[in-house]
Length: 307
Image (cartoon, rainbow, N blue to C red; front, top):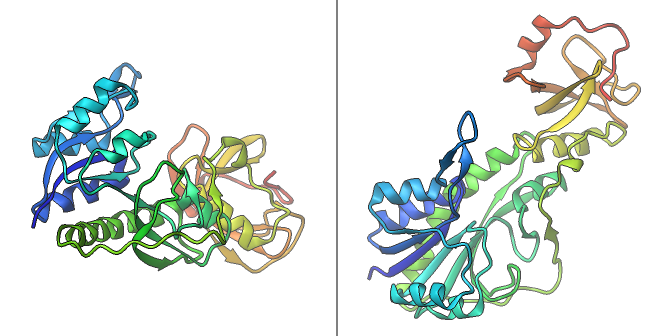
C-alpha cells in the first residue's frame, strides 16, 4: 500500500531516496529543502539544491522555509496530511510539533552505524578514524541528535582505497533501497523499532578546514585515512615549495625517511611510520590531476619535502 509522504532533504546524497520512493509508488505530497544560495561563476545566481531540482522535474510542490518553529510553518506542514515524513540530510532541526504531525511519524536515513557517529559528518569521520565498516540506518526521529529508535540497517566495509566521495555515493544508493524497504514495512504495519545502545556513542562534528593540513609525523595508514576522509572536500593539503597542494587520493607504499620527504620519482612520501604514494592531487588554482601528469610538468629537487 503506497504512503502519502513529505520528503525533506537537501544535497545530492538525498536525491536517490526521493527518486526511489516515487518509483515504488509512494505519493510525495511535498518536498522540503533548504533555500537556494548564490552561486554560479560570479556568485550572483541563486542555485537550487539538488533535491529541489529533482522535485521540480517530478512536479512535486517544493517548500524552502527558513524555520519550522513558527505556527504558520506548522499549519502548512500539517495541511499536507501525510502518513509519514522521510528525512535525508535536510539540514534543519525538526521541532517536536513537526515530528508529531505525520500520522506514523518521521523517519531519518542516517549515514552511519548508530550510535557511532551521530551528527553532521559521519562519512568523513568514519574514514578519518580508521573504521573498518560503515553503513546506513533508518530511525524514527525524536528531538535528540540522531538518538531515535532504529528500524533497519545495512553495512559495508571501508577499504583503504575508499575516499569520502566513494563512500558517500555507495551509502546514498544503499540508503535509498533501505528507506524504500522501511516504508514498505511501515505501510503494512510491520516496521520493528529498537532502542539505540548507550554504549559506543560518538559524535561526528562538522569538518573544520583547520583539520585539513596533513601531519606527516603520523603513521602512513593514519595519513592515508585522513587524506581520503577529506577527499574531495575540503581536501587534505600540504605545502610543496611554498605552494599549497591538495592530495585527493593515495595508497600505502614502502619506504622511510624524514616525515614529508619525497622518496622517489613516483611521489612516494615518508610518514612517521612507512610511507604513502600520491595518486591524485590538485595544485592551488588548478584542476585535479593524476600524479603522473603532475610529475611531467614539475621538476622536484633532491631532498624536497611536503610540509
